[in-house]
Each structure stands twice: as C-alpha cells, then as structure tokens.
Length: 459
Length: 162
Ligand SMILES: Cc1cc2nc3c(=O)[nH]c(=O)nc-3n(C[C@H](O)[C@H](O)[C@H](O)COP(=O)(O)O)c2cc1C
Ligand code: SF4
Ligand code: FES
Image (tube, rainbow over all chains, first blue to last red; front, side):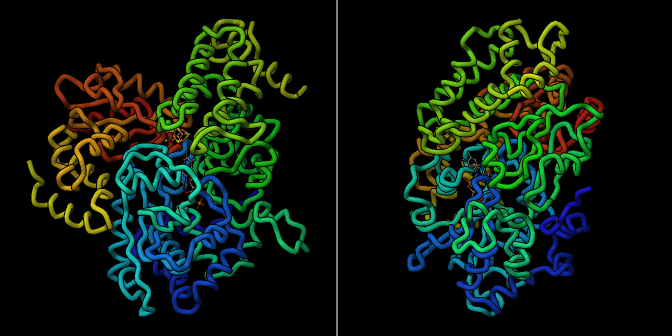
C-alpha cells in the first residue's frame, strides 16, 4: 500500500502551528536563516534550478527557469503569490495558508531574496476570509520577529509582504488577470508577450508563483537539490548532458481529492504514483461502486476513463495521456454519474467565468453550454455532438494544441468538452436518441454504463 | 458619506501598500462593503474620489467581481457551492432544502432580491467552487464556511442564527 509522503503537510495538524511560536518549535524559519545568512542569491537560484521544481499552480513551468527570465538590473521587481485557488476541484493551498502560513512566508522570503525583490503581494481569493486573517496575523508576527521589514536578520535585505483580496472571479487566477486585478481593474488577462517576468505588475518585472510552489522552497534550501530530486520521477536519461526540464517531475505534490472516494481529503504524495494508487490512498471508490471517470488536475483537465487510471500522476505522463496534472485537483466519479450532466456543470461554471475579451471564448462557451444543456434535458438534436466539438475546437483545438484566445481559459472550456463527448460518446448519443438522461433516469432499456465501458474498451 | 474612524484607519494603511492609489481598489471596495453592506452609486463616487479615478472605473470593477453586491443582501448571506465536486456530493439537495425552508428563489450576483426572505434575514445565493471540495458539499454563511452538509446540518446551522 502506497504511503503519503508529507513534507509540506508535515505537522499540518499540530495545534497552533499557524503561530510563530509553535512553528519555530518545528524547525520554523531555518530555511530562511540558511538562505539569507549562508547563501547568495545565485546559489539559491541554481539550487532551485537543479531541484527541477516545477510550478504547482497549473502550467508546471520550471521555477528556476522562470527566475532566470527576470532582468537583474531593473528595479523595483515584484513577487505575486498566487493564492487564488479557484480551479474547481483544487483545495490544497487553503491548508497551507490556514495551517502553515509561516511556511508560505518562508518561501516568499527566499524567492524574493534570490530574485532581488523587495515587495511581495499575496493575491488571496476573496472567499478565504478566515485564511486571510490567519495569514495577516502571521505576517505581523514575522515583522515583529525581524523576518520581514527592513534589514532582515541583519543581512541588509528588505522585504514587505502584503495580502491582497480577490473578489470571486476565477479568471484572476490566470497570472496576467491576477496582475490586472492587483492594479485595481477587471481581471482581464493580458496578451503575451511581454511576459510578467519582463513586464508585469506596475510595468515592472514580476514573478507569479503558486502557494505550493513557494512552500517547497524552504525545504529545498535546507535539504538541497539532490534530496529533492530523490523524490518523484525524472524521465531524462541518467547521462543526459542537458536534461529537458519538461521531463523532470521531482518532489511531492499536494492533491485535493474530491468526489466519490471513501475518504475525500488533501494528500501529499511523491510525483509519479499512479492515479489508481492515489485513489487507493483516498480509501478507494465509495461504497464498493465501480469507477467511471477521473479528472486528474482540476476541472480544466481532460477526463480519464477508468481504463486509463494506471497513468503516473506527473506532468510528463499526464501530458502524454492528453490531459494534465494542472493544479492537482482530483475529481473522482463513480458509475452513478452522468457524464453529460458532469460536463454541463463545468460548462456552466466556465460560461459564468469567461472574462469576455475574446469572441471565441465569450460566445463559444455559452454556446457549448447550451448544446450540452439540451442534450442532457432530452432536447438534443442529431449533429449536436459534432456541433459541440466544432464549437470547442474553434476556441482551442486539443489535437493541434492551438487556441484562438488571449489566455488558456479557452483550453479549459474546450478540452473537457471534447474529451467527455469523445470518451463517453455512446452516453451522449443515447441521450439524443432516447430524448432523456439515460443515466440519471436509470432506464434499463437505454445504454447502460456497461455498454459504455464495453464501447470504450473496444476503442 | 464617509468612512467610520476605524475604516478610515484601515484605508490609510491599505493605501500605503501600493505605488499607485488605484491598486487599492479591491481591498477598498471590500472595506466599503463591510462598512455599508453593499455598493451603491454614492459609494462608487466616494471610492472614486478616494482613489483619484473616474467613477466609471469603479463601476467597471464592481460589475466584474461577483463578491461586490449592488443590492443589499439579507443579514445572513448564504452562499452555496454548486460546482462539480459539490454536485457529486449532492449539493442539489442542499440548495433545494434551503429554498424550501426559506421560501425563496436562488439569487446570483446580478439579482440578490429574489433570494432574500421578506424579513430581510436571509439571502440564498449559488456560487462557484469555494476551494473546499474535499469536504463537500459546502456553504458559507457570511464569512463562515460550513462543510460536509446534510439537510439536518443545514437546519441546525440556521436554527442557531438569530
Ligand atoms: C484560467 C486560469 C486560472 C488559473 N488559476 C490559478 C489559481 O487559482 N492558482 C494558481 O496558482 N494558478 C492558477 N493559474 C495558473 C497561473 O496562470 C500561473 O501559471 C501560476 O500562478 C504560476 O505559478 P507556478 O509556476 O508556481 O505554478 C491559472 C491559469 C489559468 C489559465
Ligand atoms: S480566453 Fe476567455 S477568459 Fe481568457 S482572456 Fe479570452 S475571454 Fe478572457
Ligand atoms: S466544488 Fe464546492 S468547494 Fe469546490
């Protein structure tokens, strides 16, 4: 039986670990002490590069590489900690913020010291009122103890950290939407380039980094790159001269597991364990039911059927399986779920959250929603599935990996729409043929989940 | 129109955090909403003046973000999550139960009134994922998150609110 590997989530349940006093009893701020007193910024950047750490917010971009894009000589520079956590299924940063806010602050301090940043903003979703209070209190403690403010630990390094609340818009999790929002406007993503690393917040070089990514830093600094690469998987040949960062999947990952498992929860596992193993850690499918489908990386990720869950949970493998690790929000669906209904739920979400700048996204998303709505409610017409896929492909094309929009929100709409309707085609077709929902109605005469499985298996 | 003394103090702290005043827009609107319950046109004018921007800019922001309400919610704003992970744990039942118990429709950010009880005590509103999917289904009552809901648990919570 696979075990959890708790690094970030270690001591998560220790009472009052959110306070500085208790946090210090558990090796708190040793990462910061070592970074600021013993290491120079370049050494830290190199260590982070060597560790292979990839962004935990969704895109999985190499963290060390991102830092290298930042021009050294331009000041000021900014760090934005992405604590928006709004991708459906994602519920792992909340526990870092509420339980171990000082660990996050350590990560922020180390990143800022390494990049040469003196101001950091934590963009925290508006609904995290409790978390924001806890984090604000931790920041105050850190100032008082000399971990923040002027001349930190007598090293001459200055850093201010502020929280900045969002107000319920999903798109503000996209890094340039976040920056727009932080500047006091609608959170509408910007065209790239220029990338934030060059021209971001207030027109200055800016590094946007997810909560979990930052929380890894104190451990990497304390234990070294080699320790970090001993966890997870690296698909580069051992003797590779220039390892491809896209094949590196080192460290652990925080997973929020929701849906039809016995023990929904947040789990920390080494990267590269299979989806099946992760579901086992979460107690298996509820009530002995059969598994139907799994969303492996937040609601934007294309769905996996139960035949596909032996895929290792890492960036590289899930990309090969035409889906993604994304934010690590795992949504498990058992045989009682209607996939048309599930897709409809998500398309309603995306139609609500499109920021409206790009025509394919602004029009295509509600259009896709309406097609799926009528299929689910027995009013589907012949040709609707093709229409749905056509609309989706015109927002973003899963096969050619291209999109027509400013940000990759378009992918989040299109990829689920295409993957659900392809992988569960008989179910979609039967809805149209029978003129009703065949799964929720449990009509024996219709396509049963078994028929669906049989069809999938034959593909 | 003006902030109370404590809100003014909070405002003074906020404004110092940013190189440009406009960047304080979201935290200041949150402050205003906490102060007055919802964001009226007068408040938008007031905030515009505080931040040295045009009133249209403030309106632009207020209308974009679901958490800023242009109509007054009830004393207790109930935000029920209905996104997929919560739906898989039967959030529909929770919404239905709340509708029946409160005798109201489900509001969204554009129309708060239809989700508000005539006595102004409760507003029922559907929202998207609250990042607590592992303890679904969930709802927030004002600023408190309630998790792993059942109709019975919802009753207990509502009974306890005076
Ligand atoms: C529509 C959309 C929503 C996103 N939401 C989040 C989010 O809530 N939290 C997050 O950390 N990253 C989110 N991202 C990813 C960010 O754009 C960005 O890649 C990330 O914050 C970079 O940090 P990392 O390299 O540490 O992962 C989102 C991206 C898109 C396109
Ligand atoms: S793809 Fe959608 S969400 Fe992204 S910028 Fe365009 S309209 Fe906005
Ligand atoms: S879906 Fe309800 S909290 Fe995530």
